Image (cartoon, rainbow, N blue to C red; front, side, top):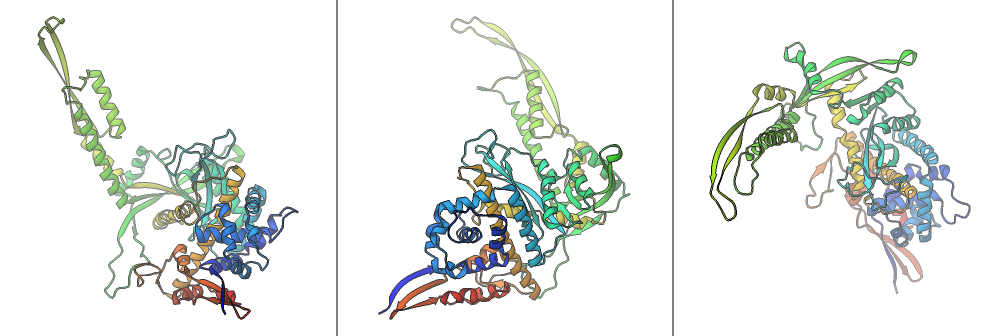
Amino acid sequence: MAQLIANERVDDIPLLLNQMQKLNLSDLVDEYFKSHGNWKGISLGKVVVGWLAYILSQGDHRLNQVEDWIDGLKETFKVGLDPAVRSLDFSDDHLETVLDQFSNDEQWDSFEGALSRHTLRVYRLSRECIRLDTTTAYGHREVEAEGLFQFGHSKDYRPDLPQVKISQAALDPLGLPVSTTVVSGNRGDDPLYIPEIEKVQASVQSSGLLYVGDSKMSALETRGYIAQSDNHYLCPLPAVQVSQADLGELLAPMWRGEESLRQVESQIKGNEPASEEPSAPPEVIAEGFDVTMTQSLGDGVEAFTWKENWLVVHSFKQGDRQRKSLDKRIEKATDSIAELNVTGRGRKRLSVDETVDAVQQILKRYKVTQLVQVDYETTTQTIQKRAYKDKPARTLTVTTVTVTTRLNPEAYQHALQLLGWRVYASNDLNLTVPEAVYGYRNEYLIERCFGRYKGKSLGLTPIYLTTDERVKGLIRLLSLGLRILCLLEFSVRCALELDSQKLSGLYAGNPKRATVQPTAELLLRAFRGITLTIMEINGVCQRFLSPLSELQQRILRLLGVSDDIYLALTG
C-alpha cells in the first residue's frame, strides 16, 4: 500500500541555487567571513545561499519566516545545497549572525571586490560604463544622534519617517551592482561619489572607464578626481553651474548660424513585432553641438588642468513638455492675480502696497516674474454711510486697486528658445552628442535596481530591524540578490540576441506575446508549480517530479543549464 510522505513546491529553487553556485557565492562568503567557533551546522556561506533563495523566491526578507520555509523544502535543499542541511540552520540566531558579519565594513569591501572580479571574469562582462546614484529606504525607528536612521530628503515620499541612504555603482548594461555603501539618511549625495568610485576602482582594477551620474555627480572636485584617475565621466550640469544667462551665451553662436547641429535619432526597440512592410525612418529626437572647455582644480604645483567637452543638447520632447508647463504656470499666475480684483463680502480690500506684495508672491511662486508684466490702476470713491444703531452717519473714502496682466513677448520668446536645452559635461573628447544622449538616458538602469530593492523582488522597505548594524548587513545581503537577478536576466537576453530569437509564453493571458528582453522576475515566475512528490511504496522511497514544460526547458537551455538540476531531485 502506498503511503504519501510529502509534497515540496520546488518552483525556481534549483535554478536559483545553480546561479549562486555559478557565482561561487558560498565559497567566497566562507573565505572572507569567518563564523564563530561555536557555529554549528552548514557553513555561513551556505546559509547565505539558502536565505537568498528564500528572498528571491518569496520576495520577503523577514528572518522569522525562513526556518519554516526551509523545513517544507528539506529534500530540495539536501540535493541542491547540502545533504546535511537542517531547518535549524536558518533559525533567527544564524540569520542575525549573517547580518552581523555583513555589517563589517572592511570584510565586506574585500568580499565585494572579490565577488565583482569573479563575476566579471566568469560572465565576461564589459567594464566600459559604470553608473552611480543614490536612493533612500525608510523604517519605523527612533532617531538617535549618531544613528544610521535620520531625517533627510526622502526619495520614497515619506519625509515623516527616518531613513538610510544607499549609494551604489552599477555596471552597464545589466545594472549589476559593483559596490554598495550604506550611510545615514541625512548625508548629502555629493560627497558620496568619490568614495564609491574608489571602491569601484579597487574592485574592477581597470582604468579608462566611463562613470555616468546625475547632476549631483557634477561637482568640480568629483569630475577632477575622475579625470586625474585616468577615467571618464558624463553628467548633466545643474543650473548652479550653468545659469540661464550662461546657457543663452552658449546658444548665441547657434542662433547666429555659426554652430552646426548634430541630430540624434531614436534607437530601434528590440520588442517591436516583425513586419513585412518597410520600416519607417528613425525619428529625430534631439539635436546638439559640443564646446571644448578647460577646467582646473587646485593651486600652484598641485594644480590639475584638463580638457572637457560641454555637450549642449536640445531634446524636442523635453522642450515641448517644458513649454506646456510654462504656459500652464503663466495661466495660473494670471488667474491668481485676476482673483485679487474680485471684491465683495468676505474678501479683504487690499491696499496698494498689499496688492503689489501679493502680486510679487504669485509671480515668484509660479516662476514667471520676468514673463508677466503687471499694471496697477487705483480708483478712489467716496461713500456715504447712514447712521446705524450706535454708529453715526459718516463719509468713507475707499481706494480700489485693479490689477491687469500682459505677457512680455520678448521675454517669453527668449524663454521658449532656452526650453529643452541641457548641458552635459564629459572629459571624453571623443564622445559624440548621440552617445552622450543615450549614455545618460540609460540612467534608468540603476533606477530600476533601486526599484527592485524596494519592490516585490527584494522587499527592502519598510525596514523593521532594530539595530543599525543589521540594517546595513541586510541591505548588503539584498545587493547580492540584486546581482543574481541582473545576471539571470542578462544571460537569457544575450542568448536570445545571439540566436536572433524571442521568448514567448511568459505573459499570463497572452501566451503568444514574445520578447527579446524578458525580466528576471518573469523568468523565475515561469517555474512556478513544479512539485516534488516523495512516496513510500512497499517500503521503498520513491520520488516523482512534475515534468518540465517546454518553456521551462527552453529557459534552462538559454541559461546553459542542464535540466539535471531538477531531475537530480528524483535521485
